[in-house]
Length: 119
View 1: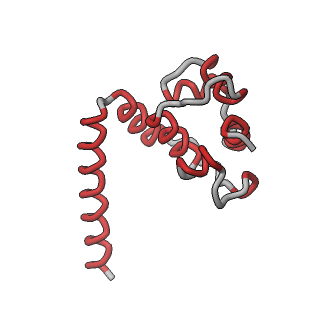
View 2: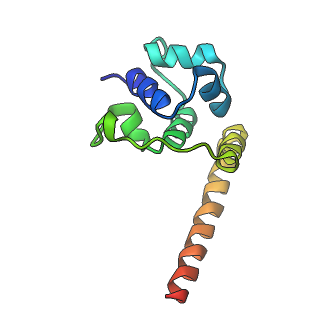
């Protein structure tokens, strides 16, 4: 199975149209169509990461189909706050994406410490 086929299957499982997926990843519907039919093979890394996040799969699954069959890949429910974070992330420069990721990891660690102290 190709990456384009995985994108199409995951998009359909998520209940998204090509236009809706395009809006979430910051591209036109025509670009999503090209991704799905394999016309575009070198999709930007940030776009792959964003799509993987939307679909709830790893970027490696999206690109290579590793370890998960398409019928078991979870479809994520719509979440406006998550979608807004993703939209902002895509619009940032690579340097600021790294900064945001570093900050998000600090927040996650603090959250885990908070959970551990309540147990």
